[in-house]
Length: 173
Image (cartoon, rainbow, N blue to C red; front, side, top):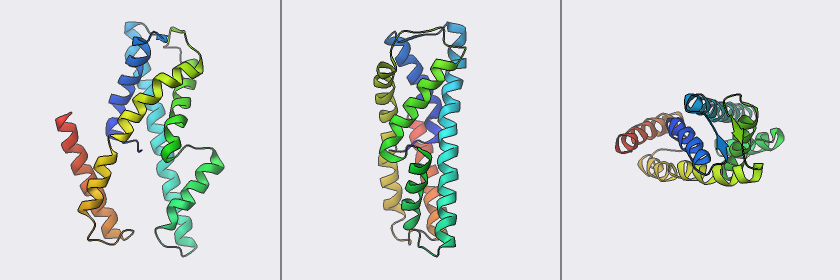
């Protein structure tokens, strides 16, 4: 599962709508956009932190003379050390961050549920949006399979194909 920046506005909107529809939170009409913006900030911060850890892992792998494949293991070690949820743990981590936001933002009028109930409502929305990209990633890998993974050429081509397919998907959404 992966969080894509292009999906963040839709994720934030769906999460707040789901929580309100289940009557787990109450947000006045004039504050809905503010709460969605707050949720977007949590999701964007997750992406920024993940990217920083990826860069840090690549630097460590390069310093140690390790190949590209080692950077994933190093990244996981960094994440564990910082108690940051990656991959399959990402949904729970992000859900917890969003719950903290809801508890502290002045834009939510009332919370009618326990943390566990909020988590049960938020997690499926996150999973749905984050797993939607799994097919895209598989398709991108198929399209760049003729290149050696970890090379600069592979990285550039991978990003180009990923952006192209995501933009095509956004046109159909």
